[in-house]
Image (cartoon, rainbow, N blue to C red; front, side):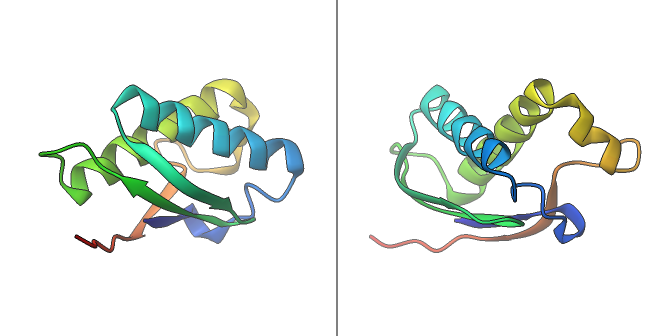
Length: 101
């Protein structure tokens, strides 16, 4: 799975924000039983390779990871919200999921 920051802002360019983003994704994943095999945070997007629990769809996993990680990121770094218009989210709508059996 991969997704990007809204407007392709370099939200994760600083080392501390990169680590915060990774920690937020890992926290969201563990909360929902998603196992992260690989995670790579780039300045404006991130890539993950995950194993999903039985019965969970790719779309549901993406929703849980994006929503949960964005909530945690803004909670721990409230000034980041100032970069976006009111009501905007951290991630853009663009996302990619690939499945292997």
